[in-house]
Amino acid sequence: MKTINYHIKGITKTIELLSKGNFLLFFIPGAIITLFFLWLRSFTSSINDAVELASDTSWLDWFYGYINSGVHKAFGILDTIFNQLYIFVVLTLLSPFNTFLGEKMDAKLTGQEFSGGFIRFINDFFRMIFVVFIALILEFFTLGIYWIISYFIGFPFIDEIMYFLIAAFFFGFSFYDFALERYEINVMGSLGFAFRNPLTMILTGGIFLLIYNIPLIGIPISPVLTLMISTVVYLYIRKRLPAHKAQTIDTNE
Image (cartoon, rainbow, N blue to C red; front, side):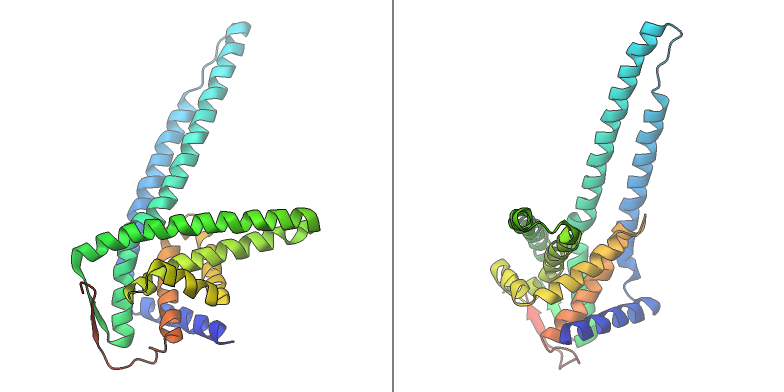
């Protein structure tokens, strides 16, 4: 199928570009945030380990046990909050860097130049937050429908597969929105593109989830790699690859 071939081309081109030293700087923001997160996690973990009350008096030791348990649970909740905040920052707040990466990669592959300036990046940031919000709502809605169907049909062995496919679809949608916005397609147009190309969304989102789940390095590198792959795939879908004559889109218009 075409979309599988496009993804193979996307992976191949991404590896080729990175092996030649192209776009490596775009890994730096995610790496910095990851290092900060690891330091913060280590710091809170050391405090958690240091808080261990004990006493030779039995009733007081029993009381301290409850305090220790409460403190450890509180730090566990804090760790979960840090995890979610970290993922949100890497996937959402760094979206202007992904926008810039998509534009630079598009220009390198097709010769087409884009303009827009700082205001464009601010708009992209708020659009990405909105797109992620919409994607989450639709994902939970789809999961809800599936849970109802699964409850009556009773095929629990396919649940994990369906959860993966649903999540992959909406992650794929969020990554193609960078290219769609670049070509001045509004959010509803992005949704239309996603539902017209479900296999493309699932394959791209699936690649993201596989990379994302690599321990330690998965979260900071997965958005960059997936963005690069999706850029190539989108350009093939739009028949802009092989490259055509360069042209400029002024996004301020």
